[in-house]
Amino acid sequence: MTEHAAASQVALVTGATGGIGAVICRTLGQAGYEVVAACRDPGRGRALCTRLNADGLRSRLLTVDVTDDEAVRGAFRDLARVAPRLDVVVNNAGWNQLCPFEDSTPDLWSRVVDVNLLGTFRVCKEVLPWLKRTGGTIINIASENGVVGGAGSAAYSAAKGGVVAFSKSLAREVSRYGIRVNCVSPGPIDTDMTLEQAAGDERVAARRREKLISLVPMRRVGRPEEVATVVLFLASSASSYITGQNISVGGGITMC
Image (cartoon, rainbow, N blue to C red; front, side, top):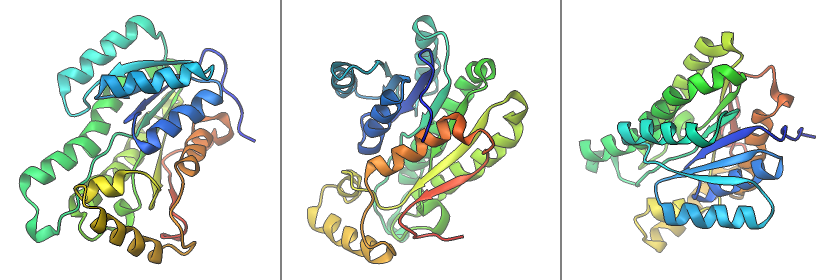
């Protein structure tokens, strides 16, 4: 059983209002963390925090665009005034749009890399001073695509593969401070992201979902809760001797 957090421990989750992010916030909140829900849309963020707080969990909103250097720096300056510590940081913000490589453009690649890889870099850069004080942990949400690649997702696969490699490098650098860095790589998960990746085309999304299921040995898509429980394990002292690892939550798509 995963241990509960001490009452004073704080966990920050980026991309907090997404299908996986919101469940991670709830799971960490239920384990006793005060949750800082970080997202771009303040309206959706306030709604999430209202739901969490109504259920007796402790949460606060941090409005931030992880693609904006100054916005990230400013958000953490604001956070420092109200949250004296951070113990867990979950870099969950991500974005993708399905596109055959031959049709992809530098603008698409720039946006995908900016959100998924550079967004992770920006947040990690800001939180390291906090985590040095607490010996905290970073959990970066990567993707199975970053390990095996994905047709129509060359930019996303490259960016998420970069997240995995970056996380391993960072883990080697910061372990001397007692900071652990790990990745969680979801496979197909039952969220709205598949539809978003298909630019809102429900038929394309349905075909992609069926194809993905056919590739999963367990023959189903995963649930956000199945990602969140792995995040909670990596956040807790139950994983105190684990760092620099990439844990697949993909129903067996990758087995190595």
